[in-house]
Amino acid sequence: MGRVFSQDLYSKYPNLDKYSIVYVVRQMVKEGLCKTPVQGLQLLETDEIDVDGLIRRIHNGPDEPVSSTDDEDEEDHEDQKA
View 1 (cartoon, rainbow, N blue to C red):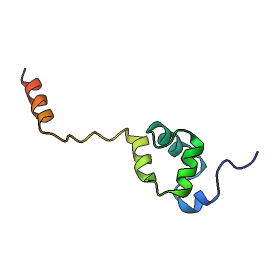
View 2: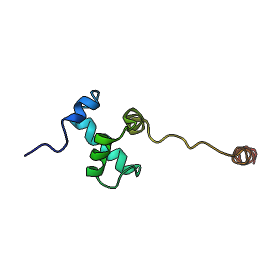
View 3: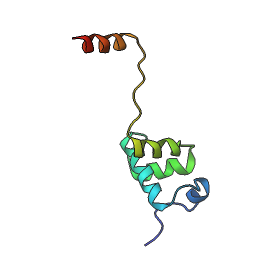
View 4: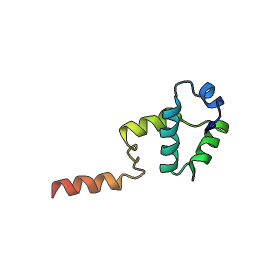
């Protein structure tokens, strides 16, 4: 069986082993950064991807969405008072 991905990924991302690459690509598909694992591997080879951020989200879950309005905060406080 041949290699699934380029050996250049090891030099580009020295902190990743072959199993970590699989988890990172899976997270990329899950977050909608790519549609297929093959596209994810191609993105890793050609683009600058925040691999550390992807690994953090794999372990800790998704980041909390940032509120863009103060209305949401006020609604949360009103619900807690009731």
